[in-house]
Length: 104
View 1: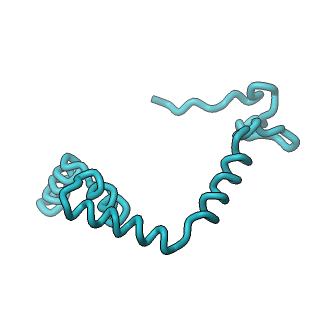
View 2 (view 1 turned 45 degrees about the horizontal axis):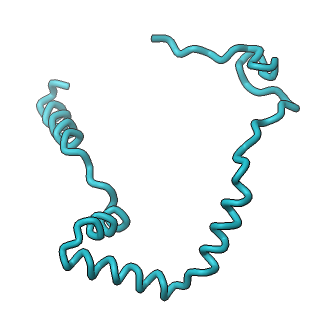
């Protein structure tokens, strides 16, 4: 299937013949809550100390060791990354086998 190109005129005639926005084209409205979210993130960062983070992580580790699988999942995702789907691993192994046999 061929990739469709944007309309040369765009929605408001704001694109050139290659579909790119022209100079002076107004951007979208953006995120109306962006400024407020930035303020809240700043407040959170200012309110949390390094020691708070250490204590939270230590609590997660303790809970994971005690058998809390949700705490263990959070720790693993944040430290070693999300698990790779088994199907993807099997496909990679299959492709590698084909390459080594010269059949790919």
